[in-house]
Structures are given as C-alpha cells and as structure tokens.
Amino acid sequence: MTRIYSEREFEKIRKAARIVPQAFQEVAPNVQPGITTAELNRIADSFIRSKGAVPAFIGVPGGEGVEPFPACCCISVNDEVVHGIPGDRRLEEGDIVSIDMGALLDGYYGDSAHTFAVGEISAGRRRLMDATQESLQQGIQAAREGNRVSDIGHAVQAHIDACGGLGIVREMVGHGCGRSLHEGPEVPNYGEPGRGPRLKAGMCLCIEPMINSGGWRIRLLDDGWTIATADGSDSAHFEHQIRITKGDPEILTSVD
Ligand code: MG
Ligand code: MG
Image 1 (cartoon, rainbow, N blue to C red):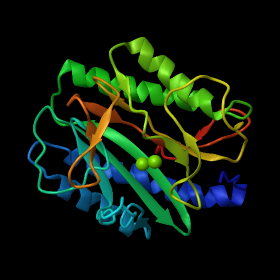
Image 2: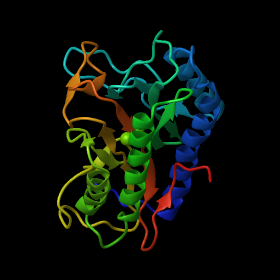
Image 3: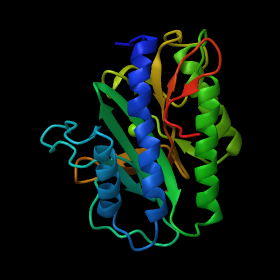
Image 4: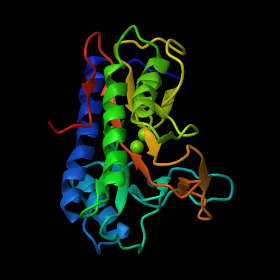
C-alpha cells in the first residue's frame, strides 16, 4: 500500500529521518582501518537511542528459519551488497563499507544508506562509489509529481549505463517509508520509463541504488542475511528518503 502523508505527518517523518544522517556524521570519522563493524554499529546504535529513537532494523524478520536481524546497522564490506551483520570483521585500508540504518521516532521511520571509503581506495572503487551516488541523485531528480515510479529507476539506469561496465542489482528495490519501514510502492533501480503508479505529492520514498563493479547478480551468504555479488565484484549502496512534492523533491535524510 502506498500512503500519502500530510504536512503534520511529514513533520514527524522529518524528525525521524534526520536522525539517520546525524548518526552517519557520528560514524564517519570512525570508519578507519582496524575498527570492527560491530564497533561502528555500536556508535550508531547509541547515537540513535540518545535521540530518543529506536534503531529500526533490530528485529526485522528474516527468511524462513533465519533469526531476525540482530543489529542497528546493516554493514556490508566490498563484495557484500546489503544486509551484512556487524561483527568482529576489522576494516582494512582500501575497503569500501556500505552502512544502512533506520530510526523509529514517535511512530515514524527514517531510512538511509551510505558507502564509505576506508582510507585510500583504488580508482575503480572510487569510480563505483561516485557512479552510485550520482545515480541516486539522478533518481531523486526524476521523483516528482506527475512522473511515474519507473521514471526513477530509468534515471538511475541511464546514468549507470552511461558510466559503463557496472551492474545494477535488480532483486533489491527502494520502497515507500513512513508509518512502516517498508511500504509501497516498490522502487526498482532500472527499467523502462513511464510505468507503474503515478507519483503524487505527499508520497515518501526511499530511493536506494545498489551498484556492482561487475555483473548484476547477487547471492545470499550462509548467515541467511548478507547479500553479496555473485561474481565477487565490489558493490556500493546509497539511499535517501525523500518527499514527493509538486516541484523538487525534499531530501529528508540530509543534514545540509
Ligand atoms: Mg536503508
Ligand atoms: Mg531502504
């Protein structure tokens, strides 16, 4: 189901959403060689709680026979795409690390993801990160009243195709977000323009391209949660939660 939110509701969504980029600001200086992903998770978790919010990913149900998600952040390193479980893995110089987190405040959710460089990274990894972030901006620009949902994914795809040699993850999509962490509509990161539901002012969407430096296919690791690239290539992930308006979209998960 796709909800249309009122201005009053957006006041609450905005407060929840804003906690996430603030948490990223706390985490960012700690993304250094030698730190464990569990330590990064702990920093984000305590920051979100210090704002009176609840880390939204804890307890998200897993697949059949898989434990609910146990942590505040999904932390996915190098060839891991999304849904990595924080643990004792130590980041190394040259890694790229994607961190995805959500905050629940006063009944409304914020959700955003960012890929960080660990120290100096290769030109290929930099290019992947830049292309992914740029494709998110292209998708956001297409997210306005009167367009259709697939215009967002088409804009993401047009940018990634123009970059060349990169794969767009197809099975994982963006989503509506507000009263629930995940609600309609699904927002794919590829496709023909002019398809799907029409975008209306008051929709609240998470746009989140996941881009691989190789092929688009993914695989599920043995922990039942972590998604990795099938071919072992690197992956980057950027996500913003936005409000559809009659004009330019409002980015809710930005501190600017
Ligand atoms: Mg997210
Ligand atoms: Mg999301």
